[in-house]
Length: 178
Image (cartoon, rainbow, N blue to C red; front, top):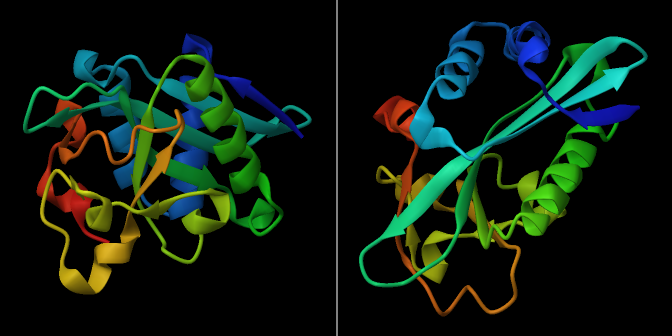
């Protein structure tokens, strides 16, 4: 399995993986929109390949904290996709791990995700709301554990808090429902 950063020529592969993984166009359209969204930059986009076949994709976009003079570099993981016949083989975890390594090296402090509370904690994510971080849109109490954060630089959690703001194309209520 090869995991590498995407290039402009990989857009077709990214969108194909998103469509195959989710069985619809919504996530592929989101990725396409985020690629054109200046407020999403800097971004980190990775593809997993089995030979020359793209089988997984992960996307991280810029975010920020509001509510005070605090300073932290924020990224948002959305979406993570693995095509059906390659799911449950650890590819998603490998994509997360490699993405977090790259973001740590680029001085990102915190990574947020709204996702499955059984899956993302296996990769170091913890509930964000109880640590003082509000999602861009309210998360219902029943789904509170789906809003998660991972600290990439020690000592950031507890020093900063507030509402997370995301890229313009991700800033739509429908993307913030689990």
